[in-house]
Image 1 (tube, protein in one colour):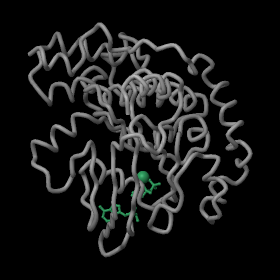
Image 2 (image 1 turned 180 degrees about the horizontal axis):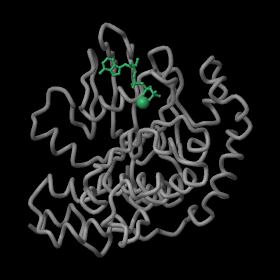
Image 3 (image 1 turned 30 degrees about the horizontal axis):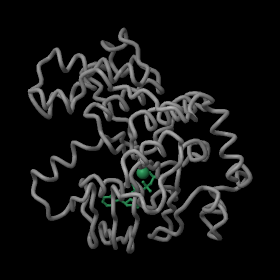
Image 4 (image 1 turned 120 degrees about the vertical axis):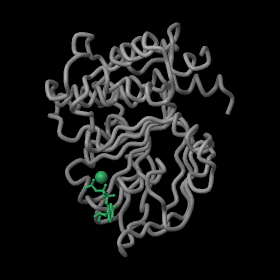
Length: 306
Ligand SMILES: Nc1ncnc2c1ncn2[C@@H]1O[C@H](COP(=O)(O)OP(=O)(O)OP(=O)(O)O)[C@@H](O)[C@H]1O
Ligand SMILES: [Mg+2]
């Protein structure tokens, strides 16, 4: 797709269509763990620039599939390609290069409890290459500002933060290396409705400003209504439906009916549009938005300057 057209589409807030380039291609994936078949022939194509939400019963294998997209688990059969790199069978160097292009917010939140907010966000920058500490500092403070964590909180330990702040710091860490692709596993789990809505708004803003592709696992209907361009449903060991929320809710399947029970009318396209407008009145724009990393040092260009 033409880059200018792509950019205009992003700013018009239109989800990428079926002809958009794929960032992740999952083909014929089977997963057997301890003799139990978790996935039985999963096929899924995640498009550049979309927010794809994965839903499914607890224990249906969502986290397991996410881990396979990250190369942390190996399918028993089938293949997963991310940015055109096969996660199985490519060289270590190639996989390492691919890993630098994504960020992850794990289900358990997972900040290091003994490290300050600052050091948690600095960790991926320090791990990856020898950046001078003043560059690390600039990058860390920039990422904290991006997720609306004030500079005074940088020296705090995770135990001194609220649940919503922990999620935002974990998001800052996931964004440390300027990823093109962001994985979120249950990003709003454990947050009260207000913090959950705040976090969702933040992800929506970042997604538009940074032109991210987002793969998100969630149990939360509000999060789906607010963010998802497409929803993929994992049930009976395979993907039983994939598409916009308003199409998926109408698919006759026992899990889908119970998941959306009482929410079907909120998932209509017009209701979803209204909800998004109400949640973030300033978000739907047609003018190009300022990109938060413009005019300042980013992890990528800091590396080039070294
Ligand atoms: N390392 C492992 N070894 C054996 N079985 C595993 C392993 N990891 C996960 N499982 C099993 O695989 C199944 C899928 O687990 P997974 O964590 O992917 O589910 P999930 O859909 O993410 O659930 P939840 O919604 O509760 O987070 C479960 O039955 C789990 O017990
Ligand atoms: Mg899980």
